[in-house]
Length: 253
Ligand code: NDP
Image 1 (tube, rainbow, N blue to C red):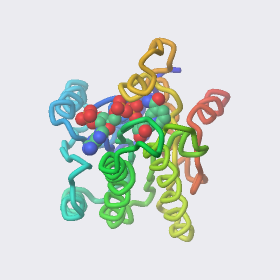
Image 2: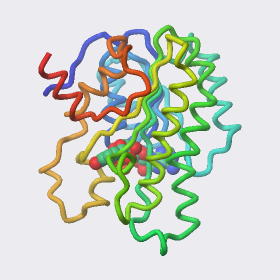
Image 3: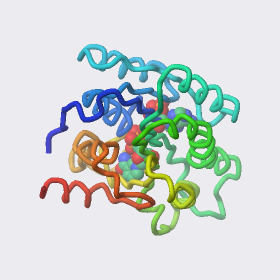
């Protein structure tokens, strides 16, 4: 399946976390190629600059780089970002919570408490803090989309997946609570997505013996990531979406 390139996100502003690598990088490029101004949030400035340059070299809407280490950012950092988006843009139309860490894999009994806390800070608390700070900008949009990234281990627990699995269950919970709070609004839709096994650094860390060439690329997921940012996805709200199932549905249309 090829990456759709069209103007379906023309004039939209979309923030992607973890935009410097893996699935987030592919999503940032896809949204830019569809006309959106993309705010690239991530930890490693040089990676964000490479995505910024790729977007500029294709003469797409100029991106914005926002380096932020989610492990150490405080609520004031998120509030500053929220205010600057309101100052610079008419609204925020999309928020892809994509950044995550895998952390240690191993039995709960031997999981280092400080590693657990750090992973929860990145994978859960940062998602709450960022969402909370950006809701005022999202409320200004006529068609805002929030996507939170889950995993199959966030929908069914699996031994030794530790804080990562628990953080993804929490992500599903945050999505459901927020979706219910927004049930009476029509302009913000929130869902969670499970990309499934994908050829990235995170997957390589989790399965070092696996042949990466046997896995789908981030780019191959992009028709679904694009669909979920578009107006056409409006009926979806409060749903735990499996990207592979959605891709099959989209390719059958
Ligand atoms: P990658 O490891 O390739 O990319 C993760 C991105 O998150 C990187 O850009 C990384 O920044 C950023 N990030 C990590 N920690 C922080 C932090 N403290 N502050 C800011 N940014 C941070 O992962 P994937 O692309 O594979 O994963 C994307 C999402 O998909 C994740 O939520 C993951 O849980 C989920 N997922 C992935 C699967 C897979 O098989 N790949 C399967 C199921 C779910 P930097 O590059 O600077 O390190």
